[in-house]
Length: 555
Image 1 (cartoon, rainbow, N blue to C red):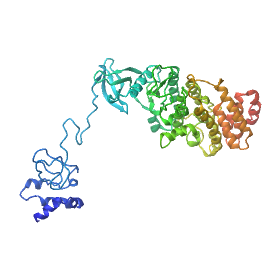
Image 2: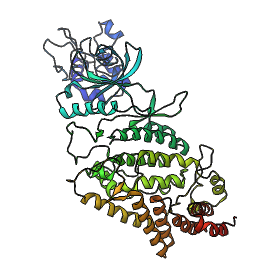
Image 3: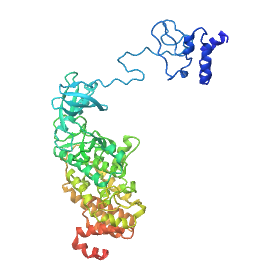
Image 4: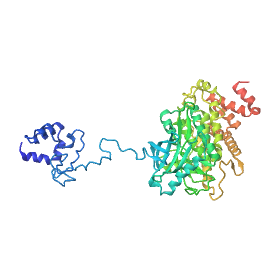
């Protein structure tokens, strides 16, 4: 083969790349001088795709360096490109301390370090924008702990340092079995980095529970969220509101003596209502995660513990439906929906999920835009939640024998094996648009009141239960009575049913609402009608005992 042709091939990069691998390999062998037997045994590869691994060969640092593409010896000083074929040369090999190709990256620099002379870092278990979280061992106690370290580069940022210190202070106030326990806080002796030491938890957060185990049986989710509310109750008693409750901040452990042991985490933006420390942000600043923020939190209004209860309601909605009630492409869209839109009832959002009417009514009540219509304390919410699995155990068999309304599945838990809970709650219509009209009207009034309320006045006390001097329960009862009156005057049965459902969600003790709803459900949902009639009789025997007995043909 002529030498001129050989030389032209060395510079024809595109020609080699276009050849099939076997043809290019044969062509490579023809270019090797016949007298060099070693090169025939181990041929040079004229293009990267022919070399095993197809990665560039490192260029040599000495004067005997060769091009990784054309395999020609390079003159000294050819540091960046080959003078023959123009191929880019690989940089000099990295120092031995740096991870190279095919090697594990260097481990975290703090692994093996002893922080503050007591906590030996063993493993990196998480990291975020503010810092890293390690598994460490308390040397004196031989106990595993969770060590949270603030990034050294953030030590000059007073707002970040303030948030980190506030998390330590807020969590240290709490001494509840369902709250994360803070063991120590301070600065590292070596570099001055802030650290926070907490108990080490071996479990997974609620987000992973929902991802791996949804749908969650109603009895189990009541148990999990009741523990969250117990932790919040103690926090609110110490004038601490969390402001960033979400599934990622709820850890679930499976202990031998306590299945589904819950811990509430991350009080990083907690607000201490009686704190004398300077505020980290303005009073009307919006802090938290938009998908879990209460309307008053989204608008920067004064807050109390009821904003945390709203976040629990969002998590409950997510646990029973597998979806968020309010989501969107950006934070502003989500916040706008939180303030202005009513949630789609859970059983309409997820028709095939085993969601009881009691659970749906409680969730809709907690997600009221007006804080006065929600449960007024974490303990009240907790008691309402725990009462759901105990209500009317005979309901499951009744519903299974009845025709499911509107093509939905029977409201029976498919997981626990126990009948779905029942009680004096409403069965919301799954296809009517009337509820949106009623709910949106209430939401509009509540939102307008929240937005137009003066912000310069004194802050209401934590967990306030009055509105304009009237007890919140009385306010709720009055609103429920007004909804019942409108339902009685309506000629539209779907609208009337939805108004009554809303009334019961606001005030579950309204006997007339239960009685009227029972009458509307009698033709389409006999099991649901029986539940509402029995609730009306239980709440007001003097008025409804005989009438309900005649309708149900019971003594």
